Amino acid sequence: MKKILSVLLLLCLFLTACSKDGPAETEIFAMDTYMRIRIWGDNDLLHDAVDEIRRLERLFSVTDEDSEVYALNQTGNAELSADTAEILEQAITLSERTAGAFDPTVYPLVSAWGFTTGEAHVLTREELDVLLPLVGTEHLRLEGAAAALTDGAQVDLGGIAKGYTAQKCLELLSEKGVQTAMLSLGGNVQTLGTKPDGTAWIIGIANPEAPSEAIATLTFTGSMAIVTSGGYQRYFDLDGTRYHHILNPETGIPAETGLSSVTILTQDGATADALSTALYVMGMERGIEFWRESNDFEAVFITQSGTIYATEGAAPLLGGCEFEEITR
Ligand code: AMP
Ligand code: MG
Image 1 (cartoon, rainbow, N blue to C red):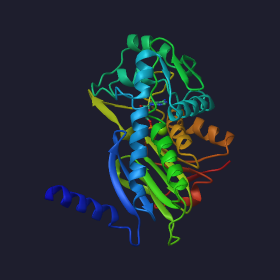
Image 2 (cartoon, rainbow, N blue to C red; image 1 turned 90 degrees about the horizontal axis):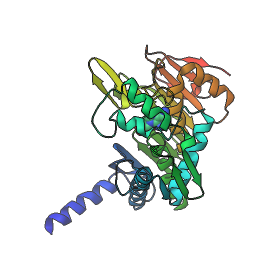
Image 3 (cartoon, helix red, strand yellow; image 1 turned 180 degrees about the vertical axis):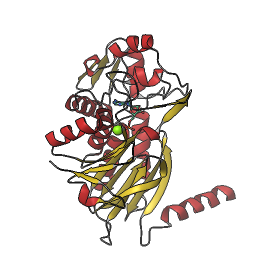
Image 4 (spheres, rainbow, N blue to C red; image 1 turned 30 degrees about the horizontal axis):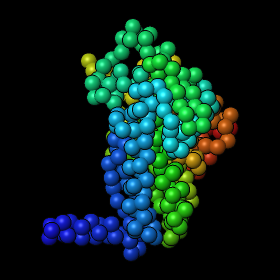
């Protein structure tokens, strides 16, 4: 009992440690990544934020046998709860918007490559020929809360779930009166409001060659979602070749477009997440074209040769590195 009390005390101390001047803060492991939650103001709400992340993880996981996505993938039919229906609807819309570069039905490929099973395997031409026809949003029907997949098709929300979760979590905190918070869910960062002392947010962009270090920073005030996709975030090496986890849904193989990472800046977390995956698949040239046709996001590209490019709305925020500006 004494032990439990001292653990509880330690936990309370940790949760409130920074609360006097700075934020209350906690770290958890969820959705296969480390997540950090910071809230300025009300420490008690850290628990609400953690609960919300865990709740959404239980719905969206492709590997948790109790999740709604798992049930849909196994049976081809599911009556979904509001969040799963909403994220799927957003995923379909973003897939259409990106002409399939972001595709929530890539799971047959992702799983065959071993990215979720831990059994790394390079797909043969024959295997690709069998799996590729199962990929495409035409295999996924969503009518209200009812979802259906054609035979063999499977959904993977890995390219959008963290962004959606960050968005929902900040909306929940906001409803509960929080004015300032920051979530860092793996490569997904989302801020709410401005810090009470008025100082800017400074968010690092990971160095693809040394991901624990920042290669550049983004400095701004206010609410923003900043999401980075990069081959360096998950991969395996086999016979001297590196195979990463962002697949080109047209070819079924890891997207190789000369990019090391793409960072998207926008207001909505799910949009930022899906677009970072999509632009990584598109590559710089198509990505820039897509940016010119859009007006709701900015981007930072890092090429495999180490050059950094920033769209004209991202450029004024970017620091700590040399870069080329992309104009409209
Ligand atoms: P992200 O890190 O957000 O770019 O998402 C990558 C994850 O999304 C992968 O680990 C897969 O689970 C899934 N994924 C891979 N390729 C795609 C794609 N082209 N469209 C949508 N999701 C993908
Ligand atoms: Mg993504």
